[in-house]
Length: 270
Length: 340
Image (cartoon, rainbow over all chains, first blue to last red; front, side):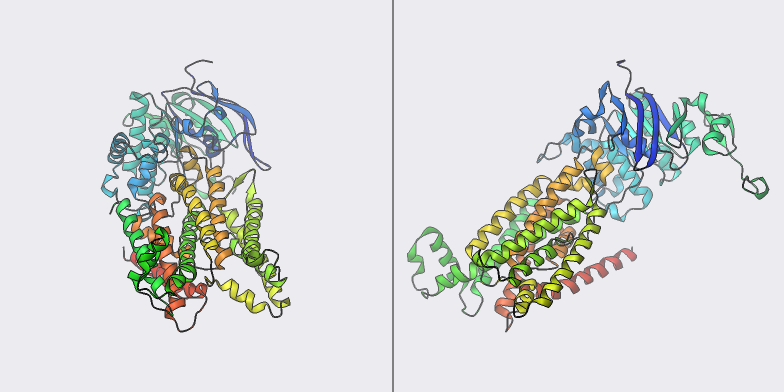
């Protein structure tokens, strides 16, 4: 096994009852890169990310992490390797912001032990970076959707893992904090050899941040490769069934995708 | 306030309430006399009893203390179970009875009372109630699991349906029961009358072991409230923790119900109330809820026993006081939220 491979996904199938969610997936993930997964609603992005953190087990096929079957790791061990920012979160109990972020240190704190000074330092640092230290003692139940998402994001960062998996992790944030969060991720990829795998709806954010893109549709990977190679009008058309124009943008220093509104007369179903 | 100081304060309050309520009743006994009697019982030093009415030691140690301690332990047990059920079902409105455990216990007790089963002596009804509660739990867990996973939503659904069926069964039993119907109804309303030291030891054993198990998994329970996906990615074995805590909390509930009948609202309100004081961290919430639950149920039982002119079932009292109180908190909190 090549030591440079992080994830080796081979021949994965996953179904919910009769419904096939993932169909014959192959993927190799290398460390130190920012991966983006794009595709329409219900294409299997979230299911695929769940398999990578072992929240679900594929019905057939194998996933290896650092050359070893992912089932061979204990949950606790895996929690020190891979963290997840989920798409939906719903917390019913009045935990404080700081308590939630501190939960990110759970894989490092033995039962009955109190958090160490190092744990608390990491938590404070992460809260500052995410701009949430000003409401550290507020209850999570009192925050807005975007603020909650920043707390959940910070919780995953406090886990301090080499791999971060983001499932629409910035969907409720305003543009300032979206850029702030993704900048932190990109910095980690570039200077700390972290690996980020992010499902993103915003194609221009994907274009600006991702080194590699994976296009998914109906449970299959349609196209994958470096962002420069695979971000093109044909792939957008194939996956999302919309027309677009893609150009290199000087200001963002990346490819950008633009769309135009469709007039009634231009619609297919008309 | 630190967790240690808080626990000490509430613990001291519990001891004071136990001493005061032991002195209350038809025969008034002063607190000092109560303390002297208890110390003389423990140390065997009979000189402490000098000058105390010779009937007092019997009243304290054989009549009142077993009842008082059982009430306190059941209050603690129901509150612990409430914390756990609310945490597992991710629902602050869940209580120890949400999964049909009480309906199962009531059904078991009703069967024993209807058929006048007596081969286990005075323990026939509690044993049947316990069997009813535990078998209901396993039926509900079986119904709500798929692929070895148990989801909170399925648990609540299965619990409500099973409870509805059992309630119909209880109604049927009441219908066919002639002279036993009043005994059944009285049992269902809950009471601590004529409890013995055996009840004290049995409930203490179950509740204290259950408490330690719950405390052991308290941090996992905190993390489970982030949702399964986050919890699993933080290294928590969500399904294992959920099953262990579910069984533990249900056993605590079953033993409480089987000695005292059905006492509502304690397991719902106490955890709710204590979250204002301790926050949502279960490591702090569990001990605080246990102590306050013990204090409040003991106070309620003392009111029916020693304050009211006639004794009413304690389950009725907790529902009559607890229900409106809960509505008040509920309204108050909503108003505060609207107000910003």
